[in-house]
Amino acid sequence: MVSIIVPVYNTGKVLDKCLKSILAQTYTDWECIVVNDCSTDKKTLSVLIRWKNKLVPQFHFLDKATNEGVDMARFTALEMAKGDYVTFVDSDDWLEPTALAVLMNNAREHDADVVVGRNRKVFLGGLFNVSSKDHPEWLERVIVHDELIRKYYLSFFGVNILPINVWATLYKKSLFSDAGVQPSYLKFGEDQVMNMWMFPFIKRYYAIPDTIYNYRVGLPGTSDKYLNFWLENARKLYAIKIAVCEAADIKDCVFFQQVEMMNFLKTYVNGCLRYRKNQRQENIFRLSEELRHPLYGKLSALLSSRYRDKDAVRLIVKGDAEAFYTLMEGRYRSLPLKQRLIDVCVRMVRSVFF
Image 1: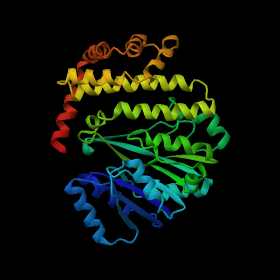
Image 2: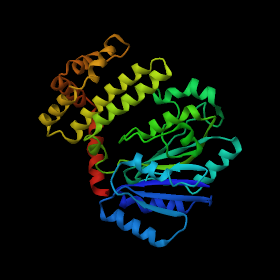
Image 3: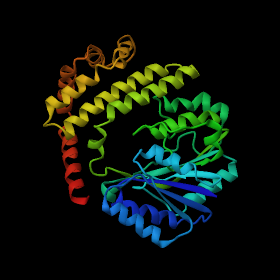
Image 4: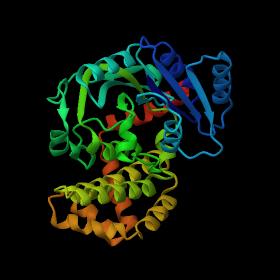
């Protein structure tokens, strides 16, 4: 049996489509654990009540007492999951009807601990979507443990090779206990960390070319809400990955994490320029407070590395938030007009369709 875990938080406008896609699966030996992580909007609560009243025996509903985030919601469901295999579905996404059948057929045929499928990125409520058409060398072949660690484990430390998402992926449930996987308490990057901890315990990994999952991109406010905890979460993610890669003695790992931290900083400022452009002094003040953290002094190692953007590094290491913000402002303004118009159009369409 497959245990499908669906964490829910304020996705009432799209939750029904998600649950219907699970009910419509051609593979029938499954249970679905829906975890309400203290949703506050009436639409979400209404949809959940309606589905509870359907009394579909394969659906189990759990209401958490406190909001703890998607990572804890998943682990709460894992404790009650009865399946031999586990997969995750975000409540704003949906499955193709044959998703479970394809995953399970391949798990059995290839005796795989993990089977990962492809996803279709759906933008702006379905106005357009994008599916991958490439065929990387790791697709449609069993990757055994030694090769997985030697060649592909770097995917979690700055060199993305294999998919790092937990959705569109089928796991043997025993992997979670074998690896001793625990909640990371991250607000983003939790998928990456869960896989990072689990991969050393995978004996056989298989990736399929089938598109089985629809990943909704660009729900309203998504980018703006992340700004509130972006940098704190980035530091936590950095610390977790540094600890793991130092223990595993992975070459160039620290360099990749430092580059990633610089990218987090740049993304944060770009987010401020997009969504909080009228709060310039507040943005700079928050950034200035952030740069007091001792982590940023360690980024000075990038000055003697192959990293190219030395000007940005110097300002970060110096703690000069205003100069760094001004530097990023200039780069943002120099973006092609086409890109800036796309940003405006995206915000307008969101306001109309959501």
